[in-house]
Image (cartoon, rainbow, N blue to C red; front, side, top):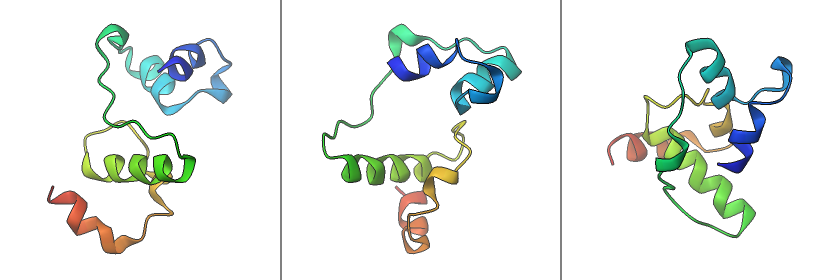
Length: 81
């Protein structure tokens, strides 16, 4: 969350997807009521969990490139959960 909030102050070419959405759509996020979906201290496990959450939520603002390393065999499982 801290990363996304501070990212808004960067140059346009360095913006995250969250910040680009905010700038392009003029959508303010409710940072005080953000819900963290999962906590994971191990980096690789955290990356896998993030890929799974991105795949499960098709209406997310994420551009889905973060999920390129997740084998397609999981797609139908994640879409149906």
